[in-house]
Amino acid sequence: MIRFLIILLLFPFVVVAQYDFNKDGVMDIMNMQTLEYQDGATGNYYLLGKHHNFSDFLDFIPIPLGMESYPELVDSLEHKLLGSINKAEVSPAEQWLLEAYSHQEIPRGNSTYSKIIRVPSMWHPWPAEFPKAIYQRVCNDSLDLPQMNTEDDPDFKEGWLLYYGHNHRQYKNNRSFAEFEEIIHHDNYTILKSSHGLIMKKENQYAWIFHSNGSLTGGPSKLRWPSISNVLSDGNLVIVQHQSPIRGIQKVFIVSLSKGIVVELNLPKEIGLSEETPSILLENGMLQVGSKEQKEVITRIDLKELMSNLTHD
Image 1 (cartoon, rainbow, N blue to C red):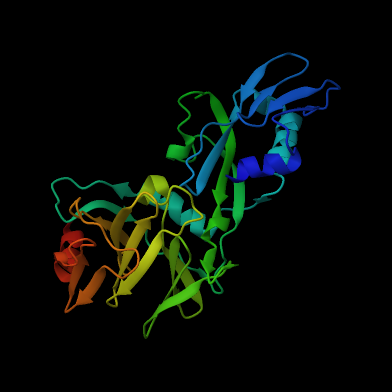
Image 2 (cartoon, rainbow, N blue to C red):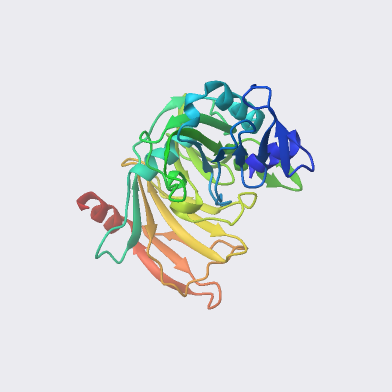
């Protein structure tokens, strides 16, 4: 988690740090593990953090109620805690995630797919911006995210929203690189991937079409492990074989490029897809999903019928 890495860099080997954060001439105390702050002059305690899901790209640090009345203190804490991350506008990748959280649904009475995410294409000028670690200061009523569910300390008006975009870096042949990899090329578009996301390039613009995130799509317990293992396309649909290394959970997502819809297939629980070889296959308009252990096709999905169902949902 970047937050703790930054803290360790600023205060190496220090669990409890003393620093005059509010510039009142009295040393304050910050617990670098729990992110508890104590005002040295008043003795008041403030909690700035909670447990982070290491499979999520998004994190939220609330500014405790009342602390926003001391802007110099808030600015000092922001500088010390987040000074190594760029403060920037929401990036295209982060924007896709925020839209996805606001437009996800669990369909009822449907045996074909278990989740629907509707994010119309948001186009940006090419070349594509490769994600980085950034943050924004936001109000608590501006976003509805599980990361902002502060039941333990619900009293806050503002906070810092962090996006750990650096985890999109890819690893190949013992080399790490922060760039997209072209994996599918059609006459009118190209699909490129990172370790956890997909973008579509058309002429001189691009759009995000899929972004893995633990509390949204599931994913690895730590983001340094890639979540996208295999990608196929029939022209209008992109099929994503999604993996959670160590956990052993495999999923299949289908992306409609024309409709801006992502669906998670409702696969039989016993299916274990192979991480070593492709376990999804397109043949004559049918998506075949194979079993790792039985080495046979377990389910077939008519993509044309799937698209028809999506149109009516």
